[in-house]
Length: 425
Image 1 (tube, helix red, strand yellow):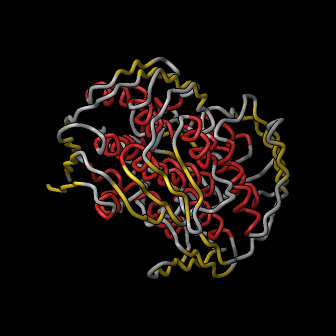
Image 2: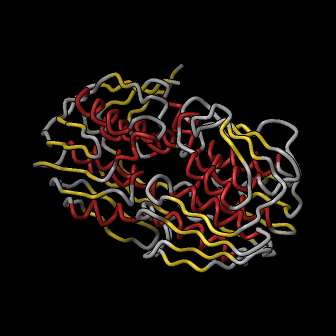
Image 3: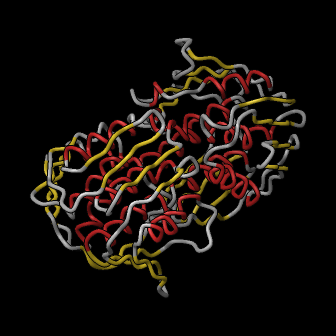
């Protein structure tokens, strides 16, 4: 699917899509809970559905309703086939750890982008806890084989600056370990809010975990019986950020369905946009973003890496210089996002200089449409679309259906707001 976007004002209201991160964690916990759990307002994104399929292959019984998933868990089986996680790193990492609870071996893999994303830290930690697994190619990446038979528990040391998903995976699966588990981080925890989200979902399913985020120490009691529950998924700040940016760049957009307060780290988009001079106001039903004159800022984004693409596009139209630092991990996302962001901005008439762990952007008064290859990266495609709304001429985004990974209705929502969007094959 290709999309052509022309400069256009956007006005109106849009409902934030459900959080895929909360959805995936709820599905994982429901797999461990003995009984029927109901997940309301789940994310039917590619990543959300990837986690649902993985849980079903491990024994979860699924009933898919209009706006709910009913999941019956508590009984683990070994998959009859390879668990293909698509492009979802969260699915791969959560369910690699959970696969250790299956009675026999499980193989997990994914698409080309997922097969290059790091897994070795998780493999090492699982081995330390008595859950044997390995990378079939010996390179610390998928395909991964998990031998099953349970988790012994004990102690594991793991880095906190590669992926917080490793810690989340161990927190969930080690509730079922045969003895207590202690996880110690030997580097500072990045994206800590995602770990807090995991702890929040575990608590909703009745699990206990002692967490000292400052010291990087987690203690998980063994053999915990998780309880089924009804879990309502809140709106996703990571996705809402794009619609808020659309309003700030070229219109007035109200985003509804966001929880205030929220555990989501990407709620900081509100603070960041305000720092840049953007006009955001709380309404009775959401957050209103209005067209604003922006200024460049310096930002350490190591806790909010998913916001970098949209912040970068806002910075392209801000007055002065913006430096976004602490983003070395973006090289290991769906694309090398540092390089891809810079290439995109420069193609659209902006000025961006990529670094090893940062990107420097000089704002310009005018951007222009261009033909963009998002490199199968959903956040790059959406960020380009938002900048296109305020750019002269047409922007052509190739293979734009990659947005379905997190926000399937993205282009329809832009159309609803009045954007000039043409979708074609």
